[in-house]
Length: 350
Image (cartoon, rainbow, N blue to C red; front, side):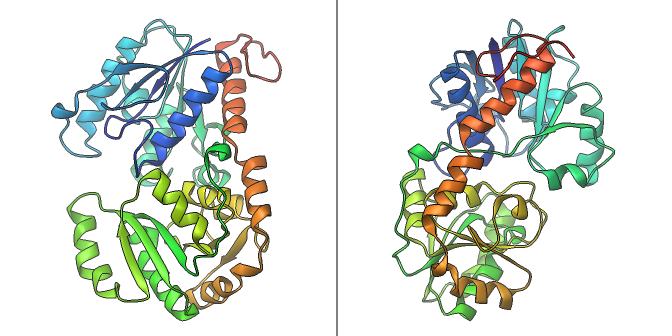
């Protein structure tokens, strides 16, 4: 089957550091290829995913990260380039909304953001014409009027992730430098638990730099250490050495990739009981889910009692890239009305 994939135009596939969507796209493209399919990827300049790559909007013509006009131009170019595939899997918001698509080619799209506010209106419109994938059950139930076709949790290839011993004597935080991610709370929790904290975060744009300067920087004092943005290898080294990942998220995040990345290294997750976290973390087994800083601090002190091998096992079983790709291929088979290699059984036209 010829599968066209459209990734956002700003961050290469795979990402060298920050880039949750791009990491998922890379995993899917590789898994589809291993299942015997012809994969064509339209992504950001500098992408190195080992499939046929088609350039989108040149980096020099992009304005700022997240600019709608950039994504729309990228989607138009992508759909023109994918005029002879069997199905398109679009990870942008602009693409499924554009009328400039190749006729007769089915399109499936994934909602990577929340189905709230203006996004609810947009995805409700998209779902009328394109099968919509949600990335968690929580994301789907927040907007019952949006016709989600299927929930497919993200996954990673754990074979590429080294297992750590958790013997570094610190907790860690990974994420964007944004109030929603809960970094201020993570610092407070680590201090309450009397456990050193190492922070890896990328600052995207003036607002996040301002948040760092005004709120976070004054709190960066021993035993709190700020590492900046890390490479993929450095990220897994940090996660593997941690007694726990602190993820006191302050909003109902649709899916937290960093949680399954931590679990893949064997590191348990201490997370706020909200959003997709209960679908990822088994409370008392692969981490602890709590509400409030004091409860999270107490849980952090107990992280060493959890079985790190079980954390890894859960990731391999429930959050593998192979499982994620298999569920996508079954959906593609249903939408395209054909037998698809890599799907457990042939599915006819709906």
